[in-house]
Image 1 (cartoon, rainbow, N blue to C red):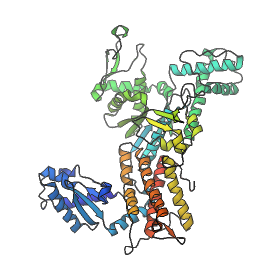
Image 2: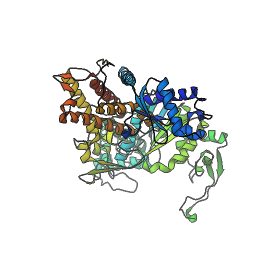
Image 3: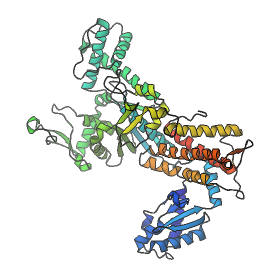
Image 4: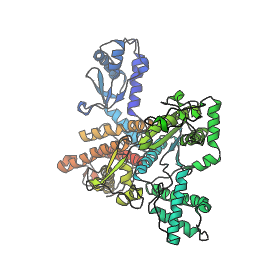
Length: 574
């Protein structure tokens, strides 16, 4: 149930039925009319802008129109006990006692699905896709958690979601990776000094991979790099991906599918995709202008295949071939996305790192061309993470080489804190991750504050010898809510709207924001009982008001749903 959606439907239906009486010539399908939460100072449950929107549209005084709508609502709908016309034509609505009870009962009867907006779309979310040449770093963590939580969110709403990892296991970087491992193996077996050359990987994890390869290939001499290359690539990638998968598992993340770039090339999927684009006249042979900032004398004017990406909203057409005629990285990506399109996904989501911002237009254009605009690709860029400890930037990892690894992060703080805090800001802005704040047991640590609210509720129910799933019956004759309970209930009513917005806009960060606000309201109510005995929940071992119990169950219900989507645990005691 969504109280905002339900009431906008009731109000617009009533306006439509009384269109002549209201002297409305134009309803414009009620576009722009919403029911939402009013500012707190108005002390009402809902607010509707119908008078303002329709008044301006029909050149009628919005306040007069709002007043007429107010009287129609009070006369025909039994859900409201009071309505005021505020500002330039807003309707502030206060729910009746019976309506409050009815809405509370609906939530209590549908606790597991409260907030769910039934959908049945087919999504592919590709995220992390870190180069398999070393462990995950902190930047990957943010994208990994964003992608995983977005998948959980879409699944909660009834969608089918495939979580995919694209393995960049083809090209020169893999050869350089294999050579790094080879030189470390020579160092281990034959005491040859490892000399760090350009494009090689220096991290200590290379030594660990080398030792594992030696142990599992005891007959291999590793005397000649060229002869050992294929074995080294296979073994090095296997051990590196195992490291990455272990990091992901410790973060609570498991992918459904791992897609190999090497197999993409071997199965000639790039050729098939390019042929499809050729057939539809989206590819031409021609010359590109030199990249911006590059001197003309260094630019080779070579005829090559070019994708007409400007036909699909890109800033410029894109090369599909390098100077030597081989496929560009972009061409490989076109082949990969052709495969995604052929797997019949309706929506594709690519979670990208901060350095891929400029890549989104070209790959979006490619998907539009490959699917004839039937498949929607959305690229979400996760900006950088800055780590701080003791007020200073956190130092680099020796094990990883030149970056801070996921293991460094996991060694400092637990999975729950990482998952919650990585979503504490929108993905498109940089994130400061302060270890000191995350380890605090205070209001300044959002994940602790939300978990602590649930622990307090669990303690309360243990004291009462009750269960969160126990049936609650509210009596209209005695039903009453104090100001804390009203604020909490209004916040609980917002949960379906939070889910809807977070899902449709791919903004899972809205969930931890909301949970923190709800937890703050609960802790405030709890603390009020310490100052004023009349606000204590329990008297003589029993709950003082059944309404209070219902409100607390609603809080626990939403926190359970929200933290489940975030993949964060809820301890019963802390």
